Length: 125
Image: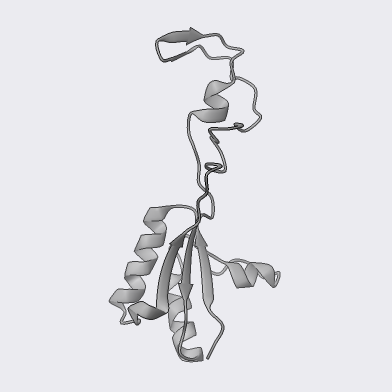
């Protein structure tokens, strides 16, 4: 059996689109797994515990009816959470031909090949 093809996606929408493309192409549902990697610490940016360490943008903002001054870094740190690489699609190809077919189907869908990145190659998907 081949090593799994592991593709990381930044958005759930991209990951589910890739998952659906493989299933629609006839891949065995047991050989295609979508996992969402999250934990209690929150997103990569907009972390609800510690923020992003950015200073304010100089703009006035209102939070919970309270007007905050331009020195308040709330918006730069907490307002727009960003999840990165938290959606992992694993494909267990039966052979090299199926691996090649999966790689071709996933090209252009916004994913990053984790194995290729670990090997020092450019992301393929």
